[in-house]
Image (tube, rainbow, N blue to C red; front, side, top):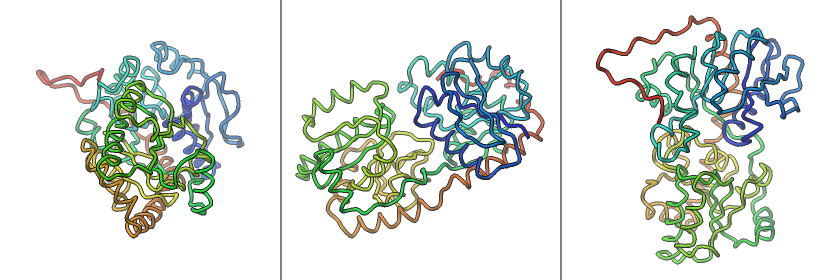
Length: 389
């Protein structure tokens, strides 16, 4: 087969979907030496993502997440005789005859439309047409699969759950020397709580700040710092306003985006990790924390319980008291801390990119042999699927 993979987004946004795309390509390269892959990259992203004989870098000029994208992509793809195109960023070229596999990472933009920018709403508002056009759909969790079925009426047999995995570099390090180095480098106390993600409303950063304030006031945990690692997202100013309102300036540390190597050290040095997001299609940070041996606290909603199993403390993301209590337990109960660390390490071993690549190849082969899906007409009087969140 000749398989195209759209990796243009990596030039603009190195996190999230781009990391998924890169890890998948790397795992496919190790697994598949027979099929030919054409990796489509942005014209300014000149370094090939994969250097292997059966992988070829190609340039597409269509702008990412732009109104012209759907007009330019089908024309550009005419230069490449593909058996299949994998669009890892939700939306395939809707006017192209090339069979498409798409990855739908989550439907947060439908559940939380007020957390989406106008431009993002315009792009992801094409999701109805995307899932109807695609030969097959990959999702990272059973929760997202049920979302597709319930929200968009997607037939179950056209959706495959292929979980993601932490980068293999996320592994335990000697805890004591790592913690001492982190304390010195960032001027942190011996105990700090770590949050890792883009700082945006869906991640519930303000809820975490209120919970951390409650931890300090109610449980007198004044010797603990909240460390937030991640790029500044939409409405970041509101986060800073809450920090000021709660007088947490001296107790919080915003590190911005950090390298994987540094992030691994931050995970290992942390007393615990917290991920109180309102909604996740999968949620990699808790898995990364568990892979490093760091106990994690996650929301009891969306896909997060599915990812962590019994290896994390579950909390209501809308209840700062619950989040504060969970943090206090891991800060003060050494036996619980050791138990959750061991469970997390074991749970993280259930996920691998090699397994994801094998399952993805199976989807490619199935989709290439499947007839184009013909969506049933919408019944008269029935509500049409929304095209904008």
